[in-house]
Length: 102
Image (tube, rainbow, N blue to C red; front, side, top):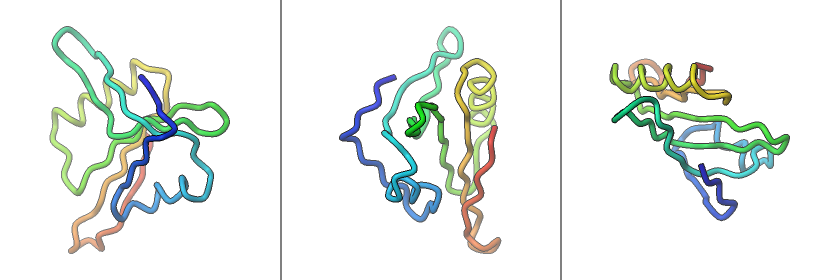
């Protein structure tokens, strides 16, 4: 799971990622996690915090499909990282981002 300091990731409207601009996040990158034979999960963001903690951040614009949610939950149970779901509400519901730990 390579994390490259030169990778800059923009997450539209997600105030959570403003932490990177404020210096509260270290490096961001991408990786692939093997969950089982022929089953893989590619997180949206791997975030290495300044204190050395690695977090997995999954972003969804509203709806998350059942298979995506299951892969996220399985990965959270298999790997020693903190997993977060950053999900945008519909315009009808205010359009704000909610962040919850998986």
